[in-house]
Every structure is written in C-alpha cells, then in structure tokens.
Length: 330
Image (cartoon, rainbow, N blue to C red):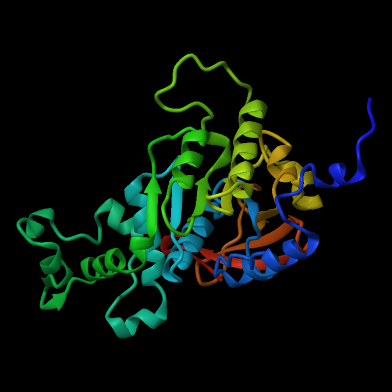
C-alpha cells in the first residue's frame, strides 16, 4: 500500500472546516423532556441521538412518552409522535388529558379530565347534543347550566399546544418515517416512536420484502433512527420506547440493565441514553403472585433507572409515582 500523508488521514472523516473547538462551540444544549425527574437522571435532558425508554408491560412507557410530548409541545417544540399500538384519537386525548391536569391552567378555566372516560363515553354527553354546533360553539357548550369542561379543554388544547403535535398512526416503515421527519420544514421536530419492537422496516406499500428475524428487524430500526438523529436536516432528538424480554425474578433482583431490552443488543448499545422504567412489585397475600405496588393515593409506584448515558453517569435511579388516567409522573 502506498504511503498516505498524515494530514490526509486526519481530514478523511472530518466535516469540512471543523476542528475540535468547533465541536465544542456547536454542541447543542440537551432537549429537556420537562419531566423533572427524567431530566435530572439524563443530566439535563435528551442529547443528540437516540434516547430509549424501556420497561415491562404496563410500566408506564406510553404515559411517559405522552407526558413528555405534551410538555415539549407546551414549551413550543414541535413533536412527531409515531404510534404503532395506539390510535390517533387515543394519543391526542392522552396528551390533552395530561395537559389539562396542570394546576396553572385552572385560571384559564381548563379543568382536568380523564382521557379513559372520554374513550369509553362515561364523561361524554350524548353525541346528538353536539349536532350542528361549530367548533367555537362547542368550546362554550353548556351542560346543566355550566360550561362543558371537556369540550372547553379540548378546544384550548387544539388551539394551543396541540398545534405543535403531529400524530402518525399509518404503520409507516422506519425508512418512510425517517424521510417524513426529515421533510418537515423549519425547525426539526422531536421524533417519538412508540415502540421499537413493532416498527416495520419495509414500507406499507412495499411488497416482496425478505423475512427478517426480530433481531435483524429491530437492529435495522434502531440503526435507522440513530442515523436520522445524527444526519443533517432532520430531528436530532429521537425518543423511542422499547419493550423488554421476558423477565425473571432474578432479573428484578439484580436490577435493570442493557440486557433487558428485547429483540437486539443494538437497542441499548446504539443508544446515547437508555432508561428503564420498572413498577415496584409486592407479593399478593392471597395469590402469592407478584403484582404492581399501589400507593395510598391510588398511584402506581415505580422506579426510573439510567442504564446508559454517554453524556453523564449511569446507574442513577429515582422513585416515581404514575397516574395513567391523567398521564402524570411525579
């Protein structure tokens, strides 16, 4: 092999005109999720790249994702929420419900509502009562002499933070999803993916894709999301949810680790930051089964643990209380 000049080697992968000082001066501030405990664990928020939040079923992953999305939208950031298990309506209602629960909104006449009760109809007036009403009339709709609180809250959400939220539920392949995120004009949005293990690699209109193992598919999805975050002209912050493999009592005893993520080691190892959300468990006296621990106020007790953080310390952990009905974590 012919000799290569040293400066040529130094320049081969360096961005044009960049020096180490340029990297320091251009380093972006972390993107806060505005969930105080999560941002404290992440040393300020999400750094550029892929941030993964994992946990066993019903651990509160979607609660966290919807809450973070709502808070970022309320701060003025745009968010693309790609949901592969919840409908457009459910994501919107969960975010709006979380927003309605903040005490500061009482002065604006916004009252908290339970998104689950809207879905099942128990807090919704008869649809016939809404026939022929405009959106403006709905926002002032009166029930029993009082303004209908849910229509008022949802109108305020639609005309406020909801403008910054785009919800995608079309089953897009990961490469389609990344292209859509790159194509957004103006400031790139934050991309939220719910969740990694069920994102397809082939587009919904593509045929003839080769069968992939879960390991191969999950690896391709993670690499595409990481490439998106590090590329030019697209979201630099990707928040992705991940399920876990089947956990054993020994796993819970030893505590969360990168090995908990399901499908591929790339989920944890390619991520800039990796967090595990785990409900506290107690042994039921009657059945002997381990069940989620519920605090006196009815909230679920849990714990968030950082299992990887390239911009700070890992192994840090905080206790949490989760209320899924209103999408809150404290």
